[in-house]
Amino acid sequence: MSDFIVGITGGVASGKSEVTRRFQALGIFVADADLAAREAVAPGSPGLAELVEQFGPGMLAADGSLDRAAMRRHVFADEAARRRLEAVIHPRVRAALRETCAAAPGPYAMAAIPLLAEGGGREAYPWLSRILVVDAHVDVQRARVMERDRVDAELAQRMIAAQATREQRLTIADDIIVNDGPLDRLDAHVAALDRRYRALAGASV
Image (cartoon, rainbow, N blue to C red; front, top):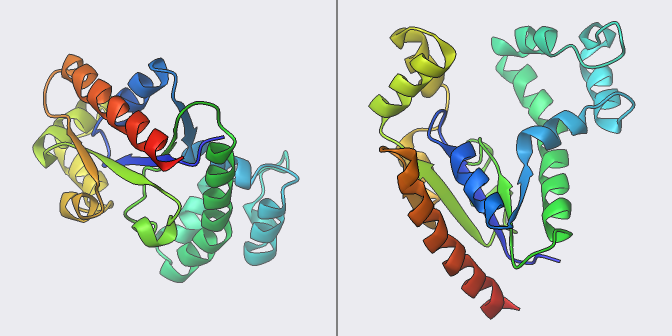
């Protein structure tokens, strides 16, 4: 059982996945908010039933699963619809992450939450013991997005602008990993934080 839970977040192409992989290699359990969001609206789930009630059966694909493309189109330009969608999914994601992390083995657990700043920060996740932000300069993010997704600079910048700003993420951070350089630099940062988290988790028992 893990009472000490670290939330990890960061902007697009900041290197969150690289960081979480290194914590996992050290034996730390990481719960994934994206996976929890998919499971929250899986076929046959109460979450999917509520979405159909809210938005109609036109949001279902032929196999009975959520038609994600149709839902994206529906909420893209409709702020009220997007908030209704989030009102169905976000509470279920938060509950699933907390339950999964609390049941995880090891000295502490992590919850990977890409939109932690956008989703209410510490107020929405009061059970997080620490928040770790993986940070990168916007120029670095843009270059990585262009290379990763094969998009131009304008689209890459729009993707970055659609998220919280660096300043908004850093405001909620207890710990920060700056990932502007080679990936092998992450190893020492992660090892140092792992030692700190193990000590803090032991002290909180």
